[in-house]
Length: 452
Image (cartoon, rainbow, N blue to C red; front, side, top):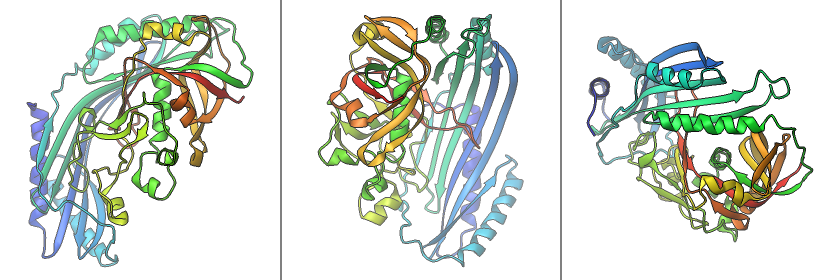
């Protein structure tokens, strides 16, 4: 892919800095350098008006210094001034060398010893943040629209003592918002939560999401229905499925968790299975994160995790591979960064009719494991969740807690999956914008246990 001026300048600056690091090497030393930079805009909105705009431009270089099997790590902020950055890096190297004397060899240290260069430049197709905000505020004018917009470029680099160089540049946006009826005292504390994320802004897609949100908001004005504990037929919208997949990503697909019997999906290898409709993979080539990892290994384009309801591969880091003498697939954290769940055949327009009578769940939150070993998860319904009768929304429901086995939800009780897998970008921005994303469909489930 062709690169723009910003991407090339950032890459060249990183390569020059890694060349400088390489020139500092002494006998028997090895290094790995990981680079991250972003140029991001953040805009908070309330009542469909801009309340707090801001921008962040930052870059950092993380060095791993290795000698005689021992390793230490350190990070330094990068300014863009070559002389200043070289001075900062040189002082970091001095500190790392001094620290190495206090460390024993690391028995699980494993890094790439085969040079594999790569470069990936995603064409930046984003309009300016000003253009996006203008489109948002115009469409949401007159609405109680509350949200945060994040947009910009992210750059990742890797280099090591072998001369290996890797580069990855990408751009995307993420808009999280809620719609309220603040002028109606009866429903002023109820909201519809929406999300729109991607690499290209499409006004017609945003308009459609606002329209869907307003339709749900109109139903929130109806009297609330309180459900009794029990099992209910449910449709989990893609956002709700995404919350469950995020929870499963917490150790569920991890090789280390599997080896220590700590995976919530452990029973998949011991007789349990999901519905044949369930196919889940780590689809790196369609994600945001770089195609290489922090030890210099190139990630596979795709790692199958669940195939037709049965366990396939696990995400395995180099350290886990060394510890348990298994093959790794370049996963640093053994957590999905680009989870993709295959869509089914249920069209959005047919969801309510297929549900018939039951609960439409737009969002979930406060998810956790109630019994990790058996795959039981619990959580709360959130925002616009509705009671449906004969394919028509009748009332919003009071908040309910569910507690059920993941093997029930996505096993024999899974009837159909939505025909569109919706893209979600992790909105986290602690220290830096997250590079994780997921693509999941909605799920029609014959029975879900509501406990209170």
